[in-house]
Amino acid sequence: MRKTVNKLLDNKLFYILLSLVISFGLWLFVVNSVNPSRTLRITFDIQYEGVGVLEAYNLRLASNNPTSVNMMVEASATDMGRLEQNPVLIVDVSSIREAGEHDVVFFLADRLMLMGTVTYTPIGSSISNTDNTLIVRANRITGRSVDLAITGIEYGILETGDDDHFYVGDPPIIEPESIWLDGPEDVLERIRTIEVVSHFIDDLSETETQDGILRVYDEAGERIPEADLQDVTFSQFELSEVTVNVTIPVRTVRNVPLGLLFEYGAGANEENVRYRLSQETVRLIGAGEVLNDLPRLGLPIIDLARVGVLDTVRLEIPAPGWTEIYDGSQYVTVEIEIFDVDVLEIVVPRERVFFTGLTEDVEAEAVLDPEIVIRGPAEILEELEGSDLSILVDLSDYIGRTTGRVIVEAFTVQVGDWPSEIVGAMDLSTHRIIVNIQRIS
Image (cartoon, rainbow, N blue to C red):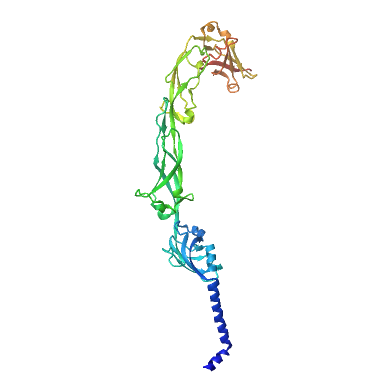
């Protein structure tokens, strides 16, 4: 026995092995005393990588995928400190190719910085299938346009106003009228109706716009919970965050006085004209700010030189911009009486007819003495003779195109030095001048 022990003590290999055992024991002592192992609960944030690859396969991570996980971790004090400073798990989803749930391996973000062994166990109801995998859900994304319904909009109109007006509401307007949705195929297939919901608190007397929220219903008319729609987006916004503009157009209906304007002449002036309108007002509908600034509505001007001394004129009622006629009255009739006025038919000698627009090789003359009708004050017309009038005819449009007799309907009558109330009094629309055009040989 002693020989065996002596032999062992003389063996160098024995001393080498003994040194290793002692060194390992010292290392364990140092580790356990200087850098002891610790067990701690840590919440790790989850960082998904490779998400861009999913888009190439028309896939998108579901929003209910975990963003963090609680784990009980055992590691040395040094490694535990590093984990606490950067508690992140990396999950690479670039290998996913189909919609559904997938087990994806995760790893510690600082795994290359750790010195020792780290063990971890998910706490409670684990979102892991194993200690190092997460269940990750991917959705296949599609698109679909859905019209919006205004059935959920509640509003009232203040129908009464002052004595001369009231309010009318038009159907609500929503903008946009339809929206394009992106989301999981199975969810979009369930959507049948999207209702716009908006409540206007007070009865309205002017147009108002506010936000409307959306409620989504399935084919059975049941509302789809927001939790089922969290992966459906419109313009990159979650559907639950989307609002649309809801406008309730409110227009004012008001009785507006009609105003009549005359172009005086032909013996008619402010003192000797009487008229009566078939209606004194017109009922207009339009924006309140427009109608409130409209004290009266002007009708087309009546040229009194073109109407008889006792006549009826039919005028179209013009509706200003942003308004329209509410009760259908498109025309108004005006009964006109011009009193203290005479009508004189007077013949103008042919030599009092003059021409312009002639060329050197053309001459013209009136074939007959033209007859002119003049209306004006009796005391003036009694003294008027045909030789006091002159007629000026412009033949520029006829010269070079024709010769012989032509009928000219446009000409100018001049009344010498007579009072201005006679000028413009001729009823030229019913008279013509026959002119003979000859070339000078």
